[in-house]
Length: 190
Image 1: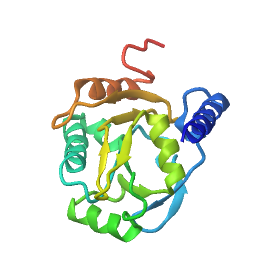
Image 2: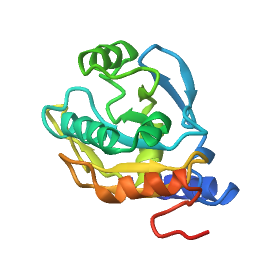
Image 3: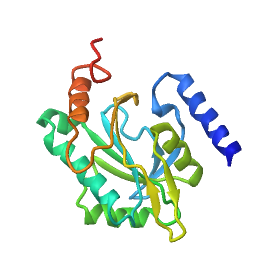
Image 4: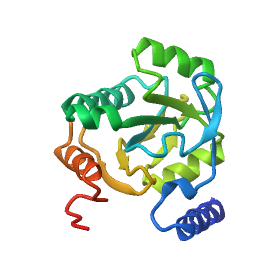
């Protein structure tokens, strides 16, 4: 297990070395709810709110979706039009493209702006490590996991992260405004 963690850490560090800060350097194949394969950069060119979840989650994951919706509702009209949403499953065994499609439909997510996707177990580990999300599968098939929403710039640089659930985090909203104004992070004055 330690060896696997070390290898994943090296992969993440190597991905960041290609173009400092862009998560899009991590070349992972995702399959969305329509069965379409694409990369982690499916929404390149837009600010993106990313989180990791699993479809059978009874509490935290529905709240993650609701929190992302809250950020969407709280954003200005212009930012709302630009922002995209990427939810990546930590449960590739059960979260098939079809189950993700059903969940997306039941949650009334706009498929042109919201993407639910899956990858293999190795891809899940790499993405979780990159985003600082911890998870652990429990004997009953459920997961303990951190609830983190990450905002990335149109080029895939992490602009802000939040663990605030149930409401729009002002830090994410400020970072979204900063991205629209050409800044990279909260407080960036470039």
